[in-house]
Image (cartoon, rainbow, N blue to C red; front, top):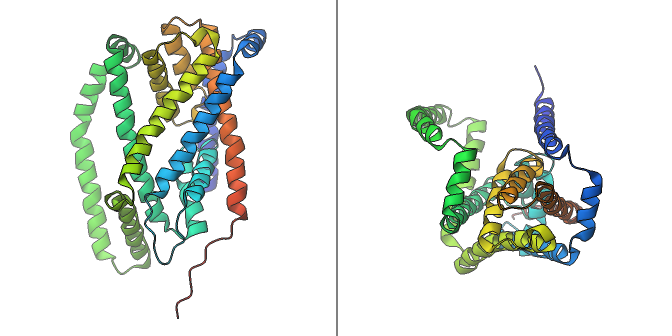
Length: 335
């Protein structure tokens, strides 16, 4: 029987192995000289501007997250600066363990501000739900601007009819399984409601619910929704500034850059470390569709992903060190 730590290590190794294999398969025929030539001919002022724009997006994410925490008497107020550093620690952890960064940034606020872990995770669920809404909106906008190409790509990459029929066939099973699971939780909770573990679990879910419901009592709702729009505009500007720095992609239209961003977003969703391989494959693919030479498309993907990864590592390490040096929160003594 494998221990949980060994299982986690195997999962990390497997996802990293898949990512590296995809990356190797994509770039196996790439000559190093052509990469050097493209790097030398790129406009690094534009690429540097993309890093500044991306960093502004990270800071804005921290500022938005801080808005979801009401000030409690027994907690330190969550400043935008503290939330930003927690977000960067989360991005750094995601490079090692996919999706673990969401929990990591919550533990930073639990340790340094006394925010219950369940409440922090609840606010992350709110954030991700909002991001999912804006991601769907971005996909829809790309569809409106490049509808024929969007449908053609969807048909090539996914068998839409098979996917739809498969989901419809599995829907009763999913709904029934979900209902049975909730019923099981209810009866177990009722039977063992005085058990210590159940009490802790109930407390966690109450805290989780309080975090989710924080969106109803936002101290700055206008700022929250405006920053959500700005974050996705920044994603677009990051991709656009990089395209301006690479000669073969500089003539892409705004709608084409938006579709490149959509493909990159899909690549980053894949359960591999930092979207390695999947991001490169999908971005290079769509650039080839737009007439960019295959080698240049691969180099474009490598430049934007590589520079953004270096930014996350550099800034994330700074945030990690600063948070480690911050004194852990201690609950005030009550008289």
